[in-house]
Length: 180
Image 1 (spheres, helix red, strand yellow):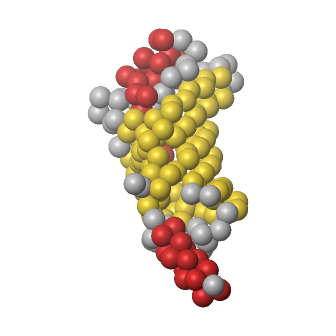
Image 2 (tube, rainbow, N blue to C red; image 1 turned 135 degrees about the horizontal axis):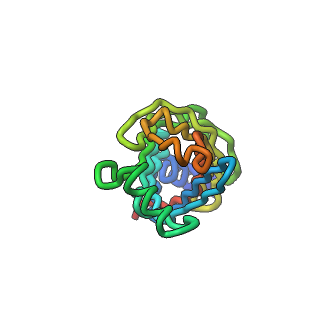
């Protein structure tokens, strides 16, 4: 009996560790807190993948999927003037979890992911502190990080520089499920 339990535990751990987890409806929010205006927007269209065996991660979000601006005109300016969504459709992060993590055990882990963040056609290497919660057969990934507009060649006109922050705060929360 004990031998059977050990064999099942080994099989289960290989299934989880070798498993790929996916998400298509993760939440991404951004906040621009400038002296004259607070702008918040979010999207529930963040896609992500985590390969437990290699610890590789990749996330993507269509820039046009953001909603929640202060006005329709603000949303239009965001898309056309600043993010240029006809040219630069998505923001992406591709990287790898740096620390070791036991994907077979339920729990909450604070790790870092190192990779390439691409927005507005400009790639920057980034290390992102991330909270990973493993519960049963799902993995919740939560992170927040800064995006300096200058780093990604996002130009703000002087006439509105008091209304748009030079550093944008981004929060991501995705619930990954095993690939079927």
